[in-house]
Amino acid sequence: MKKKILVSRLYPKEGIRLLEKENFHLTLWEEKRPMTQVELIEKAKSHHALLCTLTEKIDSHFLTQCSHLEIISQFAVGYDNIDIDAATGFGIPVGFTPDAMSEATADIAFGLMIAVARKMFFLHKTIINGRWGYFNPTGNLGFELKDKTLGIFGLGRIGVKMAKRCKNAYDMDIIYHNRTRNKEAEKLLDATYLGFDDLLLKSDVLSVHCALTPETKEIFNRSAFKKMKPSAIFINTARGPIHNEKDLSSAISSGEIWGTGLDVTNPEPMQPDNALLFMENACVLPHVGSGTQEARNQMSVLAAMNIIEFYRNKQVPHIVNPEVLAH
Ligand code: GLV
Image (cartoon, rainbow, N blue to C red; front, side, top):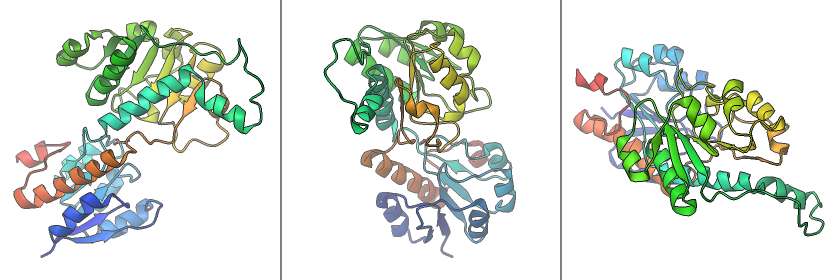
């Protein structure tokens, strides 16, 4: 019997072609909007496998209704939209697409850092609003990043790439905090491991690259921002709920930190009247870290291969819960 795969969004063709070649029966959801959970459950009920992404809520309700699924393949490196314990409980392997977007996301973190230091988004808006005026010798001043200290919260695949960019471009000192020390990266980047509070105290730029977990949820809150330097830039390209957005806004307006660059917001989408969008020292993007052709194509290939290898060899090359396949 042909396996039926539900494909939740319009993913790049590279991966879809691989699935087609494998002779699966594919159901493609071709609308721009994601399915509601009700629609998703109804469709998933008649399929063997699901290719999904962060717009789909794969919680215990979904999984209880769709416990027959043989594999869930997530098109993303983050999988906080999926209740992994519940999937594991039902014996469903969950695949994901690590590293495909590391360069692309590090570029966005690096770009946001420079954009904030030089108030780029705000200054762009002054032109649109007819307020260019005259060259101003003492106005619109930002600061330089040369020799500053970069703090990385979550020195993994993407964090290392951000740190390399900062070291090569600006000779920045690299400090970091992780659950477990990354000795290899320490050697590569001459990076220093610090406790969380010391990371807050010492970073000129603090860039977040960790996963969203119960431990990291809103770890960047009022008390964290209070410990940071008044000249510090906070960058988040990981997941919005890692910061408390009201606390972040107040920290900038009260001068507790200098500014922020966000590719992820809490919640998403950010509303168009959000105060951060009007601040001089804030630059916000609509969650586009992995948004290059190279990254998205590779993500679609990895997500497809997770399904293909599962049905060919009972193996999932990039799997979140390997224990499911161990028995
Ligand atoms: C994007 O946010 C991803 O997790 O890949």
